[in-house]
Length: 237
Image (cartoon, rainbow, N blue to C red; front, side, top):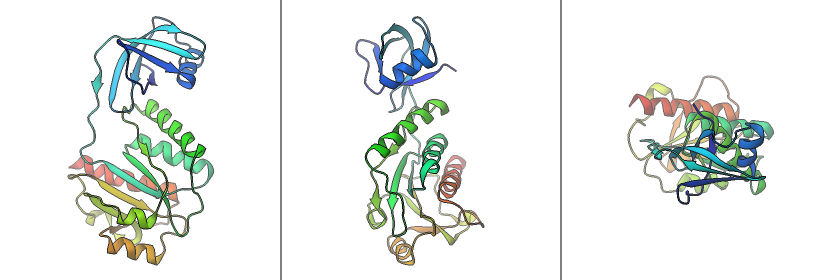
């Protein structure tokens, strides 16, 4: 498979333009030259084979050599609403959530949260999403929302199945059907879990408590285990 590069802007007269980090990565890190072919994806599902036709200091131009191919959206998209772990564990969570196929990541602010990613930190995480998409062959970028409070997330209008990770919740064999429908939302709490009041709010708002494992999991582990279980059930359906 050809190397992949992210070009979010639509082509002009069949030409794509890479700038800044993407241009430097193609020319200086991967050392592609004029005439070489790579894959270009826009982050919204389209991927195109393109040929390098011009290399400047911080800009690369490419021309499409084939029609754009559309990656169909998932039949049952997963929204992962999770408290954020600290430091490199947060980067790992975002990277792996992208790789496994999470459609939307919502940073949660809960009563016991200690991390509130905003501003430049969110922009850095969005760059992580691009890099993980390039590596995994994904053509639709995972959406990263601004942080929201748990009460806002819990009561937000949502047409699909809503699951909240809870040690006393339903075992995997008894989870609600998630293979069909408008989507699934999965909520993961902070270290120490959701407070009793937050769990009650979830129950009052029609969230289903589900158990991810018999052991106690860290935030990023719970998020990835939960995502894998949901996406696995979706594929089975």
